[in-house]
Length: 334
Image (cartoon, rainbow, N blue to C red; front, side):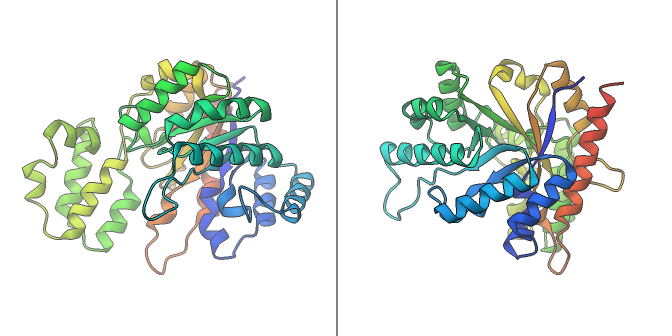
């Protein structure tokens, strides 16, 4: 029987929350109905984070007690650009991380996701606090900044050096795209991106690679692509396309002992009940074979590509993704 579990990131419901269509309690009800865990974004949903008031904490405790939703992960951001004239010092960033560790413990989370640009040098001085408060620190390995990115590599080197159960990684499944997201293409097409450029980017994936690696191997945009640029939107589309990577699952092999969590990226769930770009059936079989026992947390990102005037169908996409995950996990038991 597979030990892989399911949860939902609150990134998936940010439009509903920001527009007042769902309150925090509505979200707890929704997750309880799906029988899945919660990945919180405390900066978004906890007033005063990382130092909320007693009243805010009392309200949080009441929701946790009432709906019994599993608390899986809290996504945090060490914002090193708080000031216009300088970045935060290492001590300032470390102090912020310590506050976040204490908050995660108080809210009931044992895992925090560190955003990709977190300075690696703040982890070792914060590690005693992670141990004291029983909170694991895990860097997100995100598409566009995968394992070969210098800053990511520096962080992963720290993880391997410390070899602590309180330090690890969160893998974003956007590094496993087999196709460029169709919703992105449709969005940029609406604002003027030419068909020739869209077709060229799709062709990169059809060759078995991704724009990030393809551009790097070419030393930048190849001339055959720049010759297709007819407007600013064409170049913008080409630039953003390198945020979708086509890595092999085996890329995770050496890092498996340090993988604490997965972001199950969703750009578009199709009517066939599959994610358009990412082969989740293959990924789940791979993770099960490797003995992964953590969560896959639905992270719907197609909300940023909804066309003007169209409805943002966050809840529907989350439900479809969860149904897909459950189907693939149930199939492992047959």
